[in-house]
Image 1 (cartoon, rainbow, N blue to C red):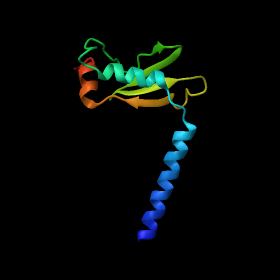
Image 2: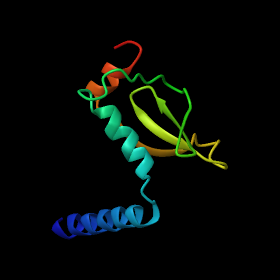
Image 3: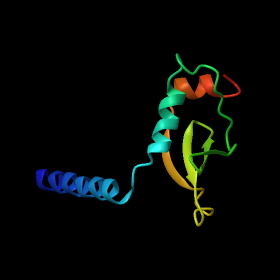
Image 4: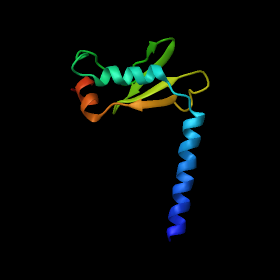
Length: 98
């Protein structure tokens, strides 16, 4: 049993390493999420699900639940690249319902 657990961890480590090495960081998306997460300094920004917006020449949108995606040519079928998400607290505060 320990061997299987060890192998599973090793496989998971390889997957994580592969994801980190093959998916480039999106600094713009990180900045969007950081800014929106800062309720103290940026209290008035609202997110609207599926409303597209452009930052630094890249097209983004949020889904319900605060999940951020970046749209690029060729990603229409899958909805774009997942970039990150807002916490439940921030998402609720920034949503139309909040």
